[in-house]
Image (cartoon, rainbow, N blue to C red):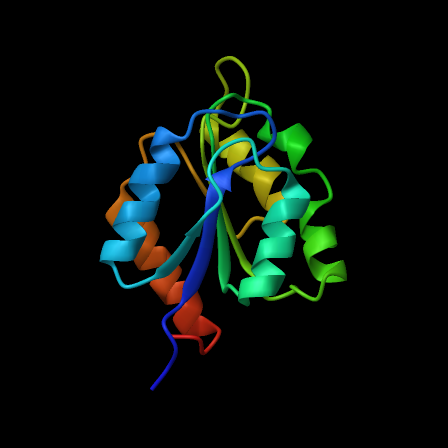
Length: 141
């Protein structure tokens, strides 16, 4: 029997918009995940430290204040340095300031090392389905 997949959720940097993370965390729990909620205004390093301690399979970051790109520069590299090269990284929300083409935003965050990038209106069922598929692909579900 495989272990219950563990995920870390929270908002990054100075982002205090925690409602999206709360909704995401609830949906993940209902879908069978062990969720560690870090809450709001979480430094990138804390996501990594908690992921190491809990041996979590994925980090899901929500951001609405538009500065996540600055907050998360070098994040994937720091994950690798911490021994988390296989951790699944998802991010969603308002990921830039002002109007931006989502395809361009998605490219930026994929270049930063995120496996999936979601717009603010993302369907949570699709996010959870994507996560299960990514975990299966790694043999973790």
